[in-house]
Amino acid sequence: MRISNQRGIALILVLLMVSIIVALTIQLNRSQRSEIYEAVNLSDGIRLRYVAQSAFYAGEAILLTDKNAFDALTEDWAKTEMLALKSEGLFDNASFRLLIEDEGGKIPINRLITGNVYNTQIHELLLRLLTGPQFRLSQKQAEELSDAIKDWIDADDEVTGDGAEGGYYAGRDRPYAAKNAPLDCIEELLMVKGVSRGLFYGTRETAGLAQCLTVFSDGKININTAPKAVLRSLSVEMTDEAVKLFDLYRREEKNNLADPVWYSRVPGTTSVNIPAGLMSIRSDFFRITAIGLHGKMMERITGIVRRETGGRTVKLLSWRVE
Image (cartoon, rainbow, N blue to C red):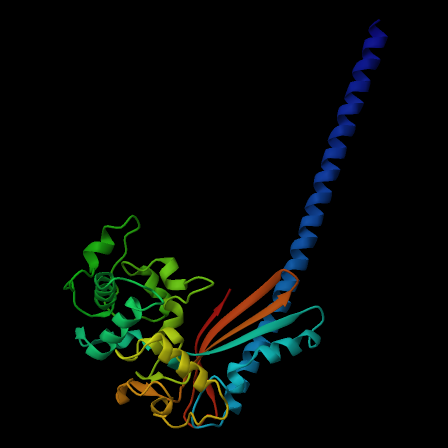
C-alpha cells in the first residue's frame, strides 16, 4: 500500500509539472505572438505616417501650382478626391486620403474683439451664425456664448453680460484659468463656457463651430469658399434660397469669381448686400488633412499652412499627428 501511494503521488506530481509546463508554453507563445503583432503594427504605423506625410506634401505642392488671382471651390486644391483615388497604386498595401480646406472662408473668431470691446461687424456675424438654421440657438443663447468667447480672449477680468471669467473656470470640477488672450487653435473653444463637443464638432448632417470659425485669417471672409452656414450669416438679407443660388453659381467653372461683387449678378439675390470690407475672393491660409490607410489602420496628419505672397512658398503654422 505504501508503494502504491508513492506511485500515485509521483503521478500527481508529474501531471502537475506537465500542466505547469503546458501553461507556461502557452503563455510564452501568446507573449511572443503579441510582441510580433505589436512589432508589425508599429511598423505599419510608421509606414502609414510616411504615407500621410507624402500626401501632406502633395497638398502643399497643389497649393503652389494655383496661380489664379482668386481661390474657389472649382480649383484643383478643392478637388483632391481624384488624387486620393489614384493613390491606391502608389504604395504597397496602402493608400491615402487628402483634404484641403480654405481657412479664409471661415469667421475669424480672434477678431471678435478690438481691444477689450466687441468688433461690431464680427459680433453680429457670429450671432447670425449661431441663430441661423445650422445651429438654431435662441438669441439669448447666442449672446451668452458670444459673451463667453469674448471673455476668454479679451485681456481683462470683467465679465461681459452672461459670459465667464476666471471665477467660473476656477469653480469647475477640474479648474483652470481663463486665457484672456487670443486663441492659438480653434480646439481651445472646447474650454469655453457653453461650447459642448456636439456644438463644436457638429454631426454627420450638420457642421460644427470647427468648420465655421478660424484663428488663421486676415480678417476677411472668402465668399468663394465660405461654408454655406457662414455664407448665410454674411448679411441680414441673406435667405436659405439666396445661399442655395450663390452656392450653385460659385461651383460653375464658367462663372467669373475673380470679381469680388459677383454675388450681385446672381439672379434672385439682388436684395442681398454684403459689406465690402468683410469679404474677399482670395485666401492665404489652408488646412491640410492627410490620412495614410491600410485596412482598418490609419495615421492622420492635420496642419495649417500659409501660402506666402506671390504663391512661391508655403509656411507651416501648425502640425498635429493623430
